[in-house]
Image (cartoon, rainbow, N blue to C red; front, side):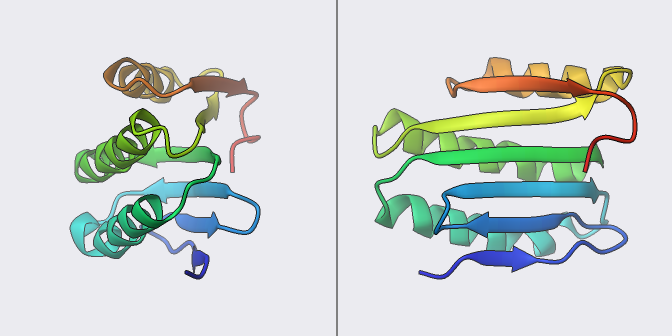
Length: 131
């Protein structure tokens, strides 16, 4: 299986799933009207990866903004990671990066943190440090 990289575009974030270093990142903004079309291959790749590999994963979410449609896709990513973690195939650590003054993104991270049993840390940064 090969690593997955998708460059950031105006409406979609950068996706960098580096299997060699077990470092997975989503960075940027996600507000495409067609989030399902964008995220579907990502979800399929992540599902296939977690079904075939037994390894630790560090997952960095450095998303500075997302719309409701993207929120659903992020939830699905967390669900895949949560299932992988619960199956004890590997340790998963999630880092949710957000600006210390962005209450919406802090709250979103807290909501995801409560919804899943993953080791989950919210990293507060000064403005313009996220990305």
